[in-house]
Image 1: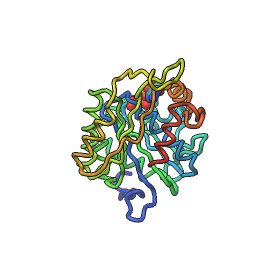
Image 2: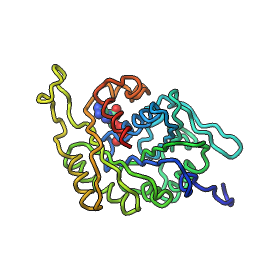
Image 3: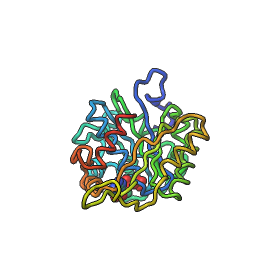
Image 4: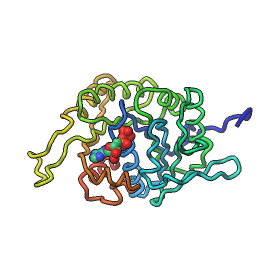
Length: 270
Ligand code: ADP
């Protein structure tokens, strides 16, 4: 939109009724995108109008997880129409803004900033109840841009139980707070493997150790002076991985799966 005044971000306007949640993590591979898409569908099942912005420049796996990997947004005049998923969630991905799908995004701060603003303001979102943003892992340019453009966004931090993951997750949370965003809670993912034989709690396997979620929540609560709760512990659940690969998140395709129950309960808390 060279030279023209930039359109305002609707979610940043004082009267906006859309709740914005940024899903953040310290490092990649902890399940941030899986959590994002399942929360989105769980909220849609509650009857909410939900939009998802995939701002994970390295991963941008959200469209595939929602079953719309091959779709491109359409354009109506100078507005971009987000891609609707089969369950009625609207999605836009940084991957959809690239001319070619296999192109690697090697953008620096200002271009990332522009891409984020474009996904927020040049996309026709309609009246959303909730907007979820899947952030790139870490405390990089996109997190800073988001903090500048949408200080009212609330942040959900995803970590695994592992000590090393928790430490970097704390940094992601602290960054959000420096940008004046409120951290509403911590999701501990891959918390344990339920016993495949009996499912009994005392037989669960703590593959990635334990305590990461509590640790992040405790540190951030102490640092910020308000309660940052652990919103839930999502077990390792093969059906969650399969659902992601198949473009059918489990909260919808397999709602009684252990992971789906926890994610549905987390969505109800937000
Ligand atoms: P991130 O967005 O943090 O990089 P992803 O959501 O892409 O992480 O998850 C990484 C991989 O782990 C994916 O293949 C996903 O299906 C799988 N995965 C995530 N959470 C779980 C879980 N609780 N149980 C089983 N597999 C999971």
